[in-house]
Amino acid sequence: MHAMRPLRFVAALAALFVLVAALRAQAEPAATANDTARLLAGLPVSAASPLASLAQDPAFKQHAQHFDTAFGNLEATRLVKIRAWSAAHLTA
Image: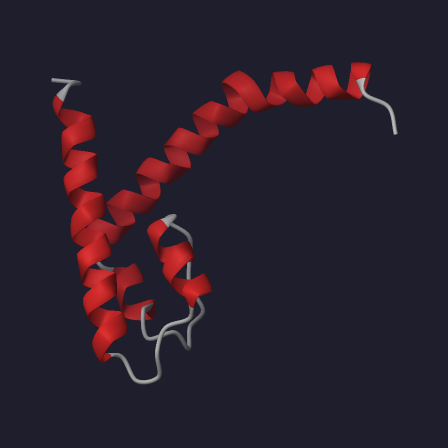
């Protein structure tokens, strides 16, 4: 069952990318590169962005939750250790 999760994630990400590209092509005014990057990363975009309506879509919310979980796991398992090591071993 876990083998299907990455495939579903890639398919959802691809669908989101296609949707963003279509909206950027027709949006007036054009979405900024920052808003596009934030949307693809699962982060909120500015309220004035033509991409703001996508942030309300259930697929986007699932995409954002996946990234929140992935980065939470990265923080708990790796980044905390890296920060502790660097504080102990790196100097200005």
